[in-house]
Image (cartoon, rainbow, N blue to C red; front, side, top):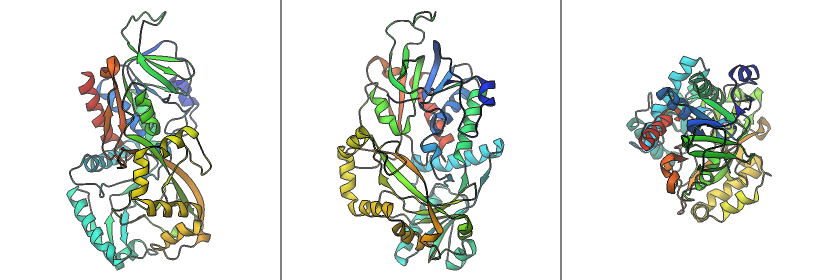
Length: 448
């Protein structure tokens, strides 16, 4: 059903490079056979493939991708922030992976000469009743070993962000920005240069055990798993790892896994400051999170190209890869609205959800939220910007799933497949640290 394909001819691939994340690939599958195949060329799949091939250079690896280019969905539609790890429960896997992942990512970008900017972040309390939550967040950040955190008052807020108002703020100088498509491209280059193969335009329809050796392969049953595409192409392997993002739940069900946790897509729509108004924002400006609501709220995000994104909101997407308001897929929509987990989430957050829907429809309502932080901002200063879709894992009780979910299928294939059903957000920041965890899980399950 879902997954991912075109085999790299290295010289041709480099010659046809269209920029970060947009490589067009030569296809020549034949009877392709690998020790390990990773399904999904988003940033987690690419980082995991890179980690595995570096740790096991004698094995043969491939990454399959259903789109024609890498990082086409969540990895290519995010805000570009390198998070510092403030928000997460101390001692949790999410906290550890974010803090370690940020350190690994900064070091990696330095080594690979990938441009980034440590522009910092202010988490701003605009009302006095938010101050206790901000102070609790400061303590949490210290417990998570986030570098350089400090609490500042209105005067220092103005020094850092002259157009921002607030009664108190948490200053996180370690927060940065980067182009994650460039990072994804660098992971791809590492993977290929270490002998890995990337296959694009290969949408997986099925993963199953081979019933007999493929004709003309000469390999017998050395590669007992076959991955089939919607175009009738086959790839053979010994082991499979899926990192399929927005389709991770459906792909895992192919091998007999539980349908839960379910992926429910939430679209986030950004606004963009007009170029002549970008002086209003220096670094990231974030709200104090409200624990009663499931999502963070609108914020200000500078980009590596000099633009500034505002938002996003968070609304149910009517299609798993639906980046526009009018995008609709009957199966995706029906699955989402009939799922008990989503209904319970909506009931628990009905007021919040209605407000998000209202702000999605009326630009002035979203600008009003942003004016709490930068009063000088007006509706005439902004344009509608890009959108992203978040693959939110939900359990049947309506809880957001924050931790890893690994699944191994059922029956004979169970010992040969590992589904990464959910990788802790922020996955892009944490990608190198997440890859370490996935690689360790692969080695333990498959006995490498």
